[in-house]
Image 1 (tube, rainbow, N blue to C red):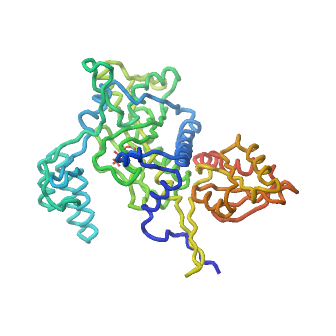
Image 2 (cartoon, rainbow, N blue to C red; image 1 turned 90 degrees about the vertical axis):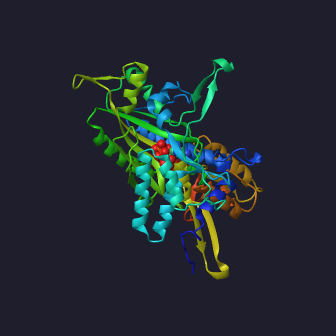
Image 3 (tube, rainbow, N blue to C red; image 1 turned 180 degrees about the vertical axis):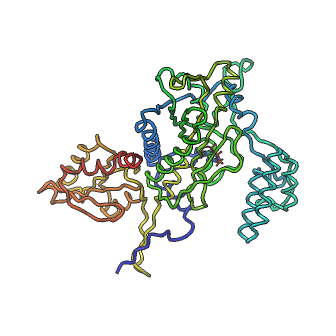
Length: 494
Ligand code: ATP
């Protein structure tokens, strides 16, 4: 009797996911031949497909399913005053501290939070709470000396040097800057955008007027953002160059909470629609609100290293448009014909990291299944990706090259390549080819055998169950096409 277990074989899952991502062409360290660049990653041949499919699922869910949401692709570089208005020049910083012995840099708040987590782990729940509250008070009062004293009093040491030989705590702005212009004297400092949202705000009136948009309406955008994160860890969870999928929804002042609540639910639904089980997702309300928000919540996913944010939903009030109006001296108002009034709209933002969503999908899909027991035990590793997200939808595999099977298989490949991402493979035994496809999450493999030559049927092998069924070649386009269509995701959202 076979003994099936779908739980991970050990608790080192995250390490396994990271090496799987590298080994099977999903994610590579950037410029690896030079030993990589910290917190920067490249997406390989399978990673780019998976990421593009996630982005498509998001973009279509926003724009195609809502007749009042349109897209935008704003430039990464923006006028420097944008970042003054948004508050990033003055507020977008983290407190950092260096250990003089190891020369390692840390986020001062994270060192204290980690100490609190340690305390909690030892059952000192109350003490941990007091520590976190102390930290919050010091940060609120911008008392950096106090934060340093807290680190010293708590006897927190550097994990590398094991000493408490700390520098003072300094604020560190997370924006990358560069010079624009070819002549140094003429050059002026500009920033790589730390969020895509501002590209939407500065185009609010352009889109509203040219698209004759009526409030409420939204603008959705996918694009790169850059943050000089002090502590960049946990693979693609925290990168210095990453991609955001953001939607700003412009509403009538006073109606923002209604929209905030409805977007909260809609976004939770989306994560589930792309295949993440509800049990691995939760809301986390912000205790300390950002300078621009009157309500904020995170959607967290249960990574192997714990529940962590993948998306933020923020009620941003009229903060951004109002600041841009003040600094640019250009009115950012909307005339609402229904109530016969001019106003600066309020904004509800949904902001999800494409890379974090990708990582969540990958962690969730990574499956190790053991069959048999003792010496007969065999482990099958595969990616249980939603078929619409899988990099390759269908692999066409001739049982052998000879007897005209290769030609027949090629013929099928040629006829389906216009419909979805299909591959053709003839090298190695068919079992090995199934395994290779399991490892990259291909939902369907088609085997072409001698019977195919006689009756034009093939066997479809299903990734998750390994079940096989015989179907006519003529049925493949519709059968596979239906199963791998993004429609399967989108229809769960209505
Ligand atoms: P964190 O608290 O983890 O730094 P944040 O609250 O600063 O995140 P937001 O500014 O709300 O993040 O950005 C929205 C989304 O952008 C996040 O939910 C996350 O998915 C993504 N994101 C933010 N910073 C990074 C990063 N350094 N690397 C990858 N994704 C990121």
